[in-house]
Image 1 (cartoon, rainbow, N blue to C red):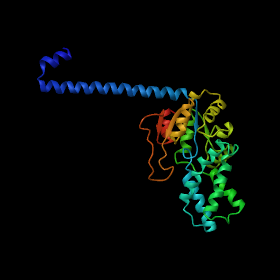
Image 2: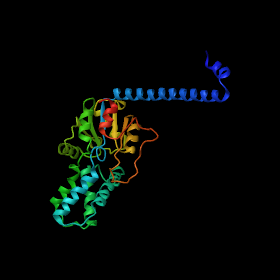
Image 3: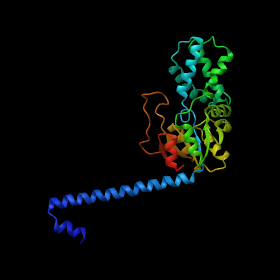
Image 4: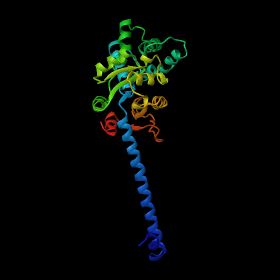
Length: 281
């Protein structure tokens, strides 16, 4: 017996309305399920097409804020400084973008991030009254960026992702900084790539395209992994796939975090282990 016949001839109006409403809900559920399944299939296709993952490092792989605060506290314990190290860490990191812009504008020649960090540090030393630091102490403190600690999921997640993909850095940090950091933190990179190799800082497209070229892969077979939407948007414009790993504590507690509610990135994960699960690694 057809649904039309049942609806028109066999059910009272109030029952017919309820019945047809349930049928409409059922059809909507089926349709939603099909679309959802289609999205899963599309993501599976991306996961199987991609051959290499390139990772932003500061904030995505390592917890720079906690690390710099700890280094400052150790310095204060030895020297007797009274400094808000959370604020100091934010100021040091905050000088990074403007310093890179001085290179982009031509005010400075190409400059390694180590040297930009030192320029910012020298200004902060004067501002915070840390002038008694010797040159050797300043050099060591500046290399705190080489000693940043990884997020709790980082090392295990990288090893898991490494079973399926080539994994490499793609950071504005210079090669020696990233190499020392990997050795210090036990980061199992297959390669250490840097904006230094392109002589263009991210988010310039040359940084992403040079990484793909060095990996001998077309951009669509490379996935950028980052905790920063702007980095991912620039990578996508260059043709790379994108994975957004949310790091809600990167800049300390109580900060608003972009949850990618518009679905602009290929994957959204809460950790590297979660990302590995989604990618089938």
